[in-house]
Amino acid sequence: MNSVHTLEHLRAAITEARSAGKRIALVPTMGNLHAGHIALIKQAMVRADFVVASIFVNPLQFGPNEDLDSYPRTLAADQEKLLEAGCNLLFNPDAQVMYPNGMAQHTTVSVPGVSAGLCGGSRPGHFDGVATVVCKLLNMVQPDSALFGEKDYQQLAIIRKMVADLNIPVQIIGAPIVRDTDGLALSSRNGYLNAQQRATAPVLQQCMQALKAHIIKGERDYPALFAQFTADLQSAGFRLDYVELRDANSLEAADAESAQLVLLAAAYLGTTRLIDNLIFDL
Ligand code: PAF
Image 1 (cartoon, rainbow, N blue to C red):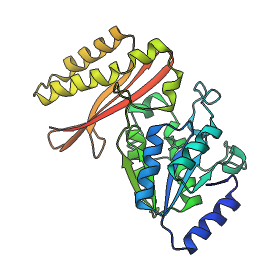
Image 2: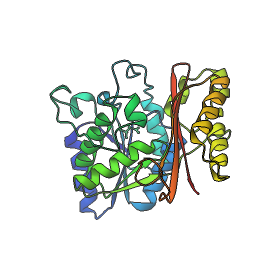
Image 3: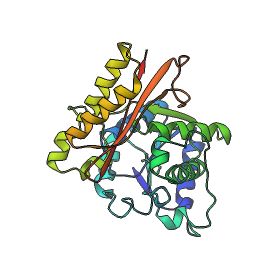
């Protein structure tokens, strides 16, 4: 597997793959790769002959009090995992390559509607940073398909809308959440949890499953159901950020017409913010 850091070298590798008639897939990441990322690489290999992974901890998507500086950077281990998985090319630019004139005056992409509320409500500006960097990566690599995990469900909806609105010729593929054996959704931020918090973390998914079971049984007193959910999480040591039931396709508030629902939640354990979601039919 080759690693390239500049746009020039990336374009040369892409041109070579294209002239050999290869279909290209992109898996954008911020590194600190886990089994969820590797599942994306494996799925990309099924759809494409040339798989590009990008690793870039994008400063534009971090708020001023967020974990940009402490975000885990594990390049050597990531390279080994990508090589072992069968990835063809790693694009690992630095901020100078991505934002040569700095970020302050950089053109940004803002996706209205789906970016509001949920994580967009708690992390102002975050999704503009995500949409901007993903738009740039898609333009840089020009893949046939790009793969993203469904754990970041709102992010995936935003990327789908951006690609549709801006007519970017790429197929966006969402891949199911990969979980640890105890149900915790894999995330690079799980590494921030101490042993006690790590033992508690699966309670988020357990409470979401319990809430889903009530809804499937036909209970519709949502304020009471959400109050119980909040209380259960609090007694386990979490601080709830949000819990919401949305239409799984539009990400608008769920209504009687919604064929598929998604339950989305974010909660803090100490200073670590965990997110998770559950998709289900009624
Ligand atoms: O999900 C992520 O890891 C990031 O938000 C992404 C899509 C790589 C953009 O920086």
